[in-house]
View 1 (spheres, rainbow, N blue to C red):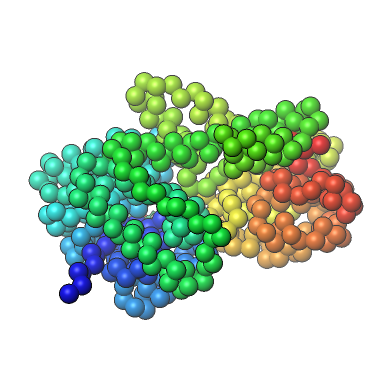
View 2 (cartoon, protein in one colour):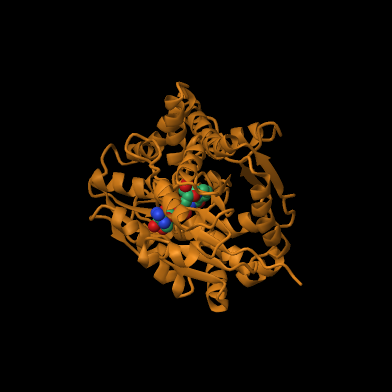
Length: 455
Ligand code: NAD
């Protein structure tokens, strides 16, 4: 007789929770997704996601159809029937930069009210080191026999399903080896079923899939691994951006520089791309959360403060470079900002540099026209009223003197340069905010080129 699969509840139907629920359901687990936001649940009931992510809608539709993926607002309906509860609620930052753990604690408390003795609570949300110990104490004080595992999430928006199916590592932190084993077995099943899941999602397998390590650590180490990984990537970006400013001043090309710097395998090329800086729902808050953790423990993480301030300077730095071409004033200049998502492949506009650039230029008097293939709706409430939303590249470029390519969506980068040149007027300036274009080709097409740290 085959062993019955554990039932799973995922708390939080956001980018992480919904993606996780979709692949667990596709691997054959009964997976409840719980949220306090009825609109997000309604979208899942309709068999789709509230955000754009390649392949996800197909998995959600299949999961809802088969009855394996069950959206609900009720902890009672879901948690009481589950062996494993994943918490994927949001951990935004507070105005002082520290992590707001309200959702983490309230989800854990509510789950504890309904969890069965011996079941496993898995923390997937990114939390400051020490949070798991506090949640465990909470469980103990409520006399609940719940096993706690920290399982930080490493998926990236835009490649969330690929990252989950062909993961490079699963980190599992805690002191209960049986509970860690239970969580590991869920991922092993996903791993074994990944070809079938990828077929439903219509995703190709990577040419060279990573080994997929399982890394078992202490609880506190697992929590610190997640924020340190994000902080290090942010540090690489801000390092490249600092050198890009020097390259601008010294007439060097940052792409040439970082290409050769990253050729050293001890350094690596990833995340050394200079440009408008990082954004999104993770890096900015994880960096500030790490700084706060440092302060709380009496450790000065000055290096991360520098990372933050370099990053914050980048949209303004790009605007200032463009300002020179406009003789010091943006007043009534028509400028297109193409790309509002914080990165390509997602509709997420949280802390998006593209949005920051559009608002900054509009604030300084420019007539700003924006376009994004997926993120227009999400960006709308964050954009200044005067910013004009358009629905095609051509419409955005209409009558503009400059186009800022703020997100490297492939069809913005691959849009023919001659068509940018044809559409743009007067100065015909292409601002390459992510250094994705070849300056020579841009100039050959009859455009003026402005990059970040490029001659
Ligand atoms: P999100 O804001 O998109 O989703 C969080 C969801 O939790 C929301 O829908 C919210 O309504 C829900 N929620 C809040 N309180 C709840 C409760 N008590 N019960 C049930 N649902 C509740 O967040 P996200 O981007 O999915 O991120 C979740 C966590 O994962 C964060 O800690 C984040 O740092 C981390 N993370 C995110 C990513 C990413 O790419 N987005 C990657 C790795 C890690």
